[in-house]
Amino acid sequence: MIAEKVSEKTIRRLSHYARCLRLAKLKGESIVTSRQLASNCGISSAAVRRDLSIYGEFGKQGSGYNVDDLLVNLEKILGTTDPPPVIIIGAGSIGCALMVSGLNGTGGYSYEAIFDIDPGKIGKLCGESPIRSAEEIHGVIKDNHEVIAVIAVTRGAGQAALDLLIQAGCKAVLSFTLEPLKVPEDIEVRYVEVSTELDVLTHSMRRKERDPAMPKWSHS
Image (cartoon, rainbow, N blue to C red; front, side, top):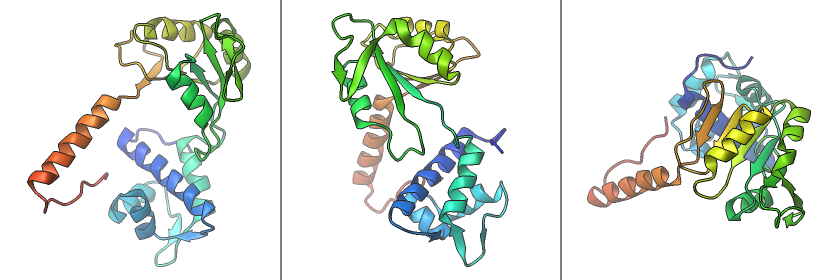
């Protein structure tokens, strides 16, 4: 039941709903209304109902949604009922911080391993995980079949890291380096663009300062 031909914005909202439902479970909540889900996610209730209605009826009008059932259905739609393992390339400050913080609360994602090309780092611990040689990447990807790789290398080393991952058979990459990468058509690469998010926040903050009566932006 993986969603097909749906906009990326919708997929992002569905992922956001799933995260909010996991938080609701942690609080012991078993039923949630579209209004509650909208409030928790910072999205309009109309958008919640519209997004969910695309895939069928998950709740009864006036009764809300069963948290467990809705979460299971969203994970099926997103294709994340059995998420792939995640590896990190680059055991610097960003890579190690990611490894130490982990992926708890993300619906089953976990960091499988962290790699580096620096011989001086190999074998040292990043949190509780030993840093492994980049030469081992191929074997890890081969053993797991589906892997998402996070590139967290120093400036200028991004393309070499991506090339290594492609040679090893990796098809999905999240990059913390903003240098432009040459990417084959069959490889999916996403960038963590902190500067863009800072631009959006700066614009929003200063726009509100000029017009205090301006309503909050909607994520829908």
